Length: 286
Image (tube, rainbow, N blue to C red; front, side, top):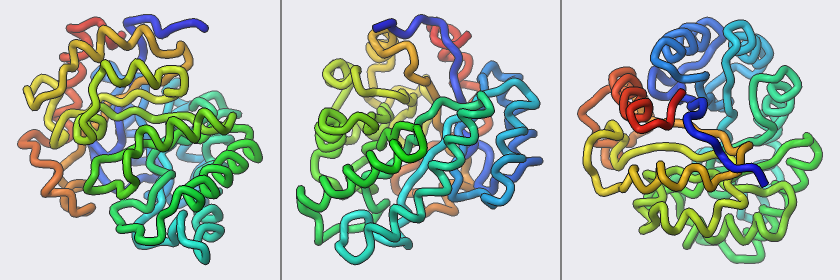
């Protein structure tokens, strides 16, 4: 298996510049992020008018940029775990899977849907059982197979992710299902008590590695994460593993009610610039 070679291309995240996503806004964000050295930006289809998905993807193609598609199950929507809701939850994810397949066909994104698709975002799940979780993982695997893509769930912090031991739960699902992979976010891992040494046990299934600091602070702010060790470990990831960076802008933090989790003093656009300098100086970013 070929390994990641540094320096490499790094994606930003559109939530660093705002909530809404449309073809014109995303074109502007791609342009600004490319000037900083990022190779494109991650997007969340739930924030898009999906009737414009091809135009949004074309914005990446027009600028020879890449994206990665982030799916999630909104807490205000159907539960992936509850008996009477999981099929509706799966139906709600299908447009995101279709956008991944479209983007892969256009050559602007890898054939993988990332994001916390394994859980009901920010919502207590009193009906959670291993059997119901396994049923959902089986459904996600079939969704991936149907669209010719992989599904890489992103374990979150304990506040947003009510799955007990979510990194291991997703890893064991990936062991059992061909189309299930793993999205590793350094900030969420830290809040689950994990670091780069633990990541080495998961590398064979990681399809998206995402830099993020505690509180979404810039990466150069010391908040307890050993980014140096993570950077040393990046070459052990698969070559096809995409690399990203995810600060948030203040409007996003306010709109999503994340003030208790995201205490950064640096707004998203400024954090993107600081993080680009940090990653370039350490040989990560081209």
